[in-house]
Length: 92
Ligand code: FES
Image 1 (cartoon, rainbow, N blue to C red):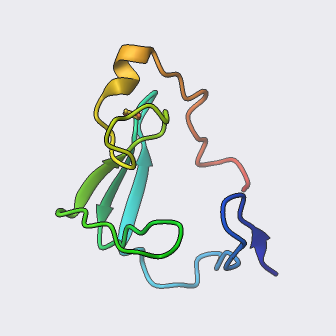
Image 2 (image 1 turned 90 degrees about the vertical axis):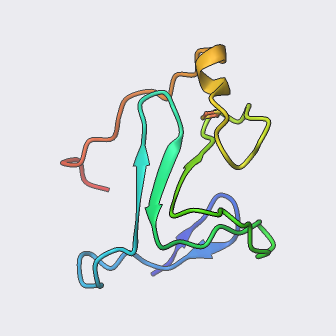
């Protein structure tokens, strides 16, 4: 079964722990960006590669960065609030 992606079509079903360890990690920082570490490909919605130039990047979550998709710390100036942090124990 596939899940609908709110941005572009469908995504693959979850593997429920049967896949190899993730090549990248994504960490939502409190009231800040999504920090991506590891091996990843960053692309535009139509699939063109964005040169991240490093193995760790901070992606804007507030939508106000002047360097989208990257965070430029504008979230601090605008008082961005991300809501409750994720609960790893909660079912998906
Ligand atoms: S999350 Fe940092 S500028 Fe948007």
